[in-house]
Image (cartoon, rainbow, N blue to C red):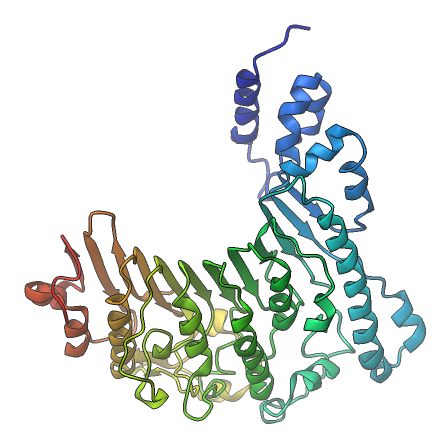
Length: 482
């Protein structure tokens, strides 16, 4: 057989992977199968295997992965090809079923013990296997997919909004409003091997039933991790105020566990979790001693990051600038390394849960529907609400402007409120390598830009143009010191 230069083989494989596929149906096209190319010759095998092993998903036992990465030199070499490993534990529920025999109360007690025991055991196997890769691996993204979504019983749909408000997360679990979440403590992970080659630690999808504490405690095993992406799912209903506070407080306690090596951080929650039960009700009150501690904790973290991305999370102006109630010193916060700050689909509520949008005159709505549980925001949107409280937005945008002045490396800052059928309530700031900058504010809820916002951004002689157009391009920003 005539051999081809490796450069030609690599080029052929590039076209195989990137050639457009025929659209025969609306379903997602199947991935290209590369395995047959490994049988052409040893040369082709050497070129194809790095592509096959680049992203690996292990959704059953780890035994097969261990088999194909140990032994012969060519098998051992595969470890170095892996750039992303998605791991999902294989949970056996038969033991729980045998022991509870349909008793939901007993199941609510037995299942968490069995579940946590099995996952801790499998985590040990995973980490021991990865520990054996130290001599062949230097840059791995480890992604967890823990999404069994096991419930204790049938959900009690007769629960009222008032009853729901007093439920703790444990109450919600026992009544099947949320699935069981895997818990892990510092003691559970302290004996796991240290994995210095894990540089990225993520959750693979938005259906993870991994508690925030479990995710953040595992970070101690990755001394060189630089990127983390956390997501919460199985969210408490928006009326479960106490349960929502518990989940939020869990994250507040865990954020200090983020290692100093981390420079990019992403966090998201379910897309309806932070909204009010209906437009007639307030959302959960997250203030504690008058402070939005969640936003404050994220601000503290962001001051040592390069990139921060949040999605569907309710945050306030405290994310960007200290409030007078914090009682902090006059020293302004500083973000010496922050380049990207994106806060997407923020629910339009203040930290105490009050809507930032009031009723729009002339908007027709059946008021009776506003007090029924199960409000569908994707169908009914914000009901009669349609005019935003400009004073509250001014306070937020002024805080954003103050923070931007303290971000010398800032390239992109984007704050987007959640809208109705689309999201068009945003502030966007971008700056390129030359120092040229663009500032835009857009509104779908009739926001009127206040003078304080104009002054805070320090637009100088270009302020009048921005008032008229809500968009401006500057050769350099800051135009002058504020």
